[in-house]
Image (cartoon, rainbow, N blue to C red; front, side, top):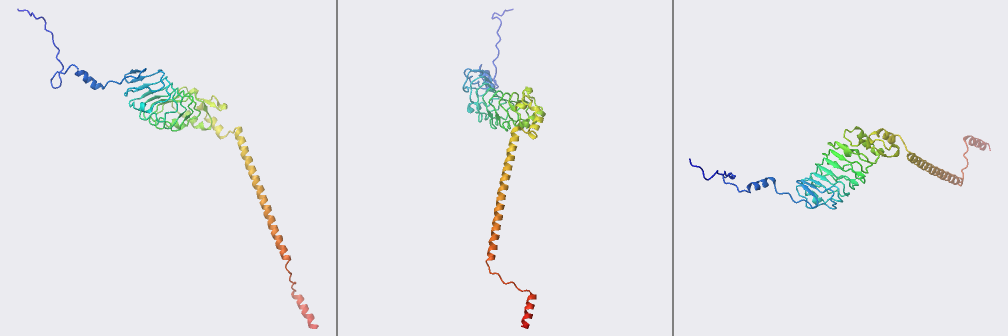
Length: 330
């Protein structure tokens, strides 16, 4: 039996075939994979860290919006920098951006036309320099679910319709700001709201805040650090929970009067008394002058009557008969 002098034969793996039966070139699978996954992501901004669809620029001492952010970015973290404004054009070309963290910056009241066409779900603007939230600031963020505006000590005003178009909001944080008043309808009409932060604000618990106090008492929302939602002024109610102020405000607003209220009422009473006295005096003077004028006119008429020659008195019938009788015998 003859031996095989050529040694064991090596198997050769067949090349992949194309649908037409022709073997594909070695790089075809790579090209196909790239076609499925899409083009490679753009470069990462300098000094930022990128991980697939996340761009993290935390604490990079940035004073302006970083250029070169990939257009397919879904999460952008700019926390801990020195940003004082956000360029609307550079931000709104990120059409896939759903998460934006701009906390701990220097952003002020330049948000009117900042968020135009973004599908943001999460927005963090805490620890900034905001002073007011207008009705148009977030009106185009229809997908917003979480909004953090806490720790803006200069924030003193939130307009009544500031969140009217953010009907999907589930979490809103307004804690540790400068708010002394908040219209109850601003938050009570958000149908999906579940968590509301209002703690550590200098609430002025007076009559205008009564509706919010009543709503807080009956609301089923979750209020983080609820024990810190307390009155800061007036001093008579300082430290009392806002949600427990309904009865006090009823007394303060509908039955109780402060010293300044009494002074105000006294001034009004004095003004009414002075006006009444003045009107009575003027009326009396007018009546006296009118009476004097009428009396003077009557005196003048009597004087004119005395200047006319008087007619002899007419004899009565008895005297006339007697005179006829005398004349008959004369």
